Image (spheres, rainbow, N blue to C red):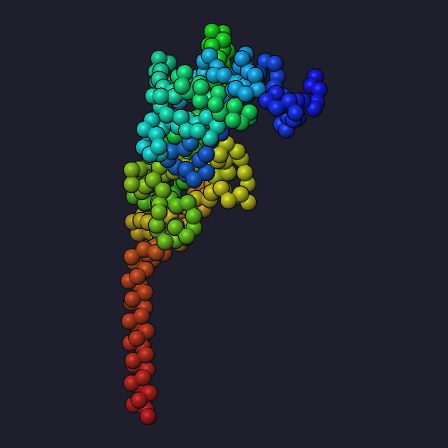
Length: 361
């Protein structure tokens, strides 16, 4: 229970303007978030952020004119990355040479001075990064919470995505020495990113055709790029040049795309600007077949491309030309040749028409 008003301890003739109330045993909380709305393919770098309350350790010598809170006796944050799913990307942000950045309130902390980073690979298939605060770092925490009683410590990790699957991640916060002794860290709720696949079955209008290999495709993240054949996607789990080719059975798996309706740790509908519709464009048809007339839209979620054994999510059919002229792809070099040819034919027609008109006159 608190009785107000309170006298200002540094000026007994005034009341306190601001009164802060703290629990006797200060509790802290922590959460983890992720940003990957713009990271559409496996191989892109996503940023995970851990936000934890700073322990408010009461200064036993507090007299109203000195610091109310002192540094905790220990502070550490651990984050474990599965080696086949995520890897730190130090090249993503020039501010950090490790892929990890730490702040206390509004103050950026310095690795080697305020904290150290230790990598523990003793668990098979996993790398745990321990961010251990030094005495200087813990004093920086105290300074931040003295300046702002609700200040937080923030740790950002830039990680490159390695796998086309659902990847979840948590962090452990050790706010004091007792949490280490008792091995009772505060564990954040899990956050996740989702990457997956889409399977296409290529077929032909010629039922006698048995070898469906050789058709080539690229993938785009919007219709404008698909029609212009610019900025195709190249996930590292796909072909190195982003050019998918059918096998003899006509199968292709477009692997390594961010789920269309899931990013930044949450689901959303098509009305959300983060929602992605992908487009498959055929750039080389089967021998003796027409190219697909238009880009094929598709979306990726937890149900697509996931069947074992392989099952197509969609079948696309090429029309056999039976010796007819093969139309070029919209936006391809063949369309330019057709345009030039059309202009020349039109010019010839106009020239002949003018000559005939002049002759009749």
